[in-house]
Length: 426
Image 1 (spheres, rainbow, N blue to C red):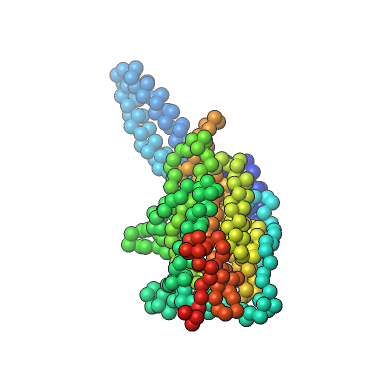
Image 2 (cartoon, rainbow, N blue to C red):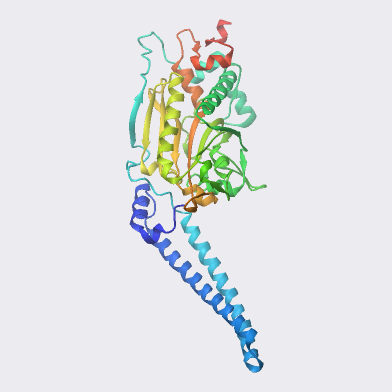
């Protein structure tokens, strides 16, 4: 959540942010009222506690009837203090429930709009002219099945729709991507981590995934645990309720885990192949830093994503995500889209979000510097989401004979192999 003081010091800024998200502006007035009620309850409690302490000193000096009267008042005051504490607890619970309903405060320079408003910042690389090469473009699934790289039928037999099995070249391609992504993470100074894909509710709520994204989250009711949709959740909760020394910041972690998503809001889109699935593996970058350094760190994360995708020979576009399409935790988000030849358009492969202090406040992660203890900032970015990256590689590097050229940067992890050949050629 954002700093609650904003409701008192700059409520119009919160209203603007809510309006730009397409969310309730009236929630601001509810928050202000709840804050006033909370502070009133705290004031009443502190007044009674002060009287209680004064009375305690008086009882120690009193004698006879005066002492008896003071003791009677002490008992009465004790009951009042308990009632006031209950009032404070109730008022604070109501206030923080409202605070957790707000999205993060959007950075002013984020463009306005919604899901259909695509603000392209730059285009890197040029899509191949397949027609000029005499190639009839195939989609990734047709290519993969010819290579023996993906088995959707048995994936569905095992687990249902939107599941798959990577076989042969498909499995080798993922392992190569895992190793290559790790090498780039280390090159950029990230600390590698293998993190749990199953987390407590506090981790999921703290990162903001039980709000607008709750419909896409898998919940194991018997254990009250959640399957993560990204290693971001585990990495954000890693330092929950801790105070980090400013001298150790920024902390840059690269976490690998499987990711699970219901894709409940997909509405039947991308049902063919592995572009939109319920499970995939993913390298996630995560940064803890001082709030004043967050925007510079965000640009670095975007740069790492661009470098990774272009090194695979993929034409990409970089988008500044519109205000109404931001997740609740993000103050700004950049997406990298890769060109998908069979669709004739660019599709999302990676994203990176500046969450400012939003997640850190919810998770109790703070920093200590010369000015004392204060919330820090968190940022996240996808280094490599395996399935979509495999889709883009297969389609962009397909050849007329059904083979697929392996990106040069991946060949060292495949024994120098330069291409995947279709089964019919073996």
